[in-house]
Structure formats: structure tokens, C-alpha cells
Amino acid sequence: QVQLVESGGGLVQAGGSLRLSCAASGSLFGISTMGWYRQAPGKQRELVAHIISGGSTNYADSVKGRFTISRDNAKNTVYLQMNSLKPEDTAVYYCSSFIHGRMYWGQGTQVTVSP
Figure (tube, one colour):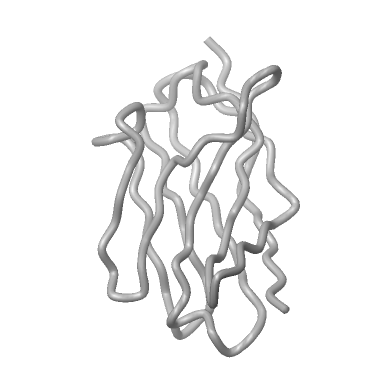
């Protein structure tokens, strides 16, 4: 069982920055694929970015060049640095962990970007 706890969400003006953190429990963090997803009201949950155990990353086109995902295996933590935020980035952001064929989710953290 993996437990994920997100933090760092909040309200920010357009053009601002936020850094999300996700702390994971368990001893398998280092070999898991970690990701950030988001879900805006009335929309489906979508992948924002993910990072595999070796450090390779993948981003949604909508956030490329603005968001950066990173991980600290010593701290069992994954981060999402979000710069140049836009109102359309407003959503609940969820941390995910994929390991041994199973996906685990955090409870989500709200990010609101005002015009």
C-alpha cells in the first residue's frame, strides 16, 4: 500500500508560480513512476507530467516549458514547479504513483489562478 500526501496548492495571480510537493510512504518510491494529474470542474482528469524511476520526464503539451517535475528519492517526494501560471491551469492537482501494475492517488490539492 502506498499513501500519497500533496501540499503546496493555493491561490495565485496569473503569471505567478507555485510548487507542489507529494510525499509518499513505503520503501518502493525509488522504482515507481510518479506523476501529477489535474481535474478542472466539468472536465476529465488529465496527465500533467510524469517522471520514471530513472529520471526521464514527460509533459502535457499545455504545460511544456512552464512546469517542471522532479523527484528526491532520498525524501520519497515528488515535486511540480509551476511557473507562468494561467487561469486555465486552475484545477485540483493529484499526485500519482504507479508500481507493480497498480496506480495510487493522493487526495488532491486545489490550485486556483486568478486573471
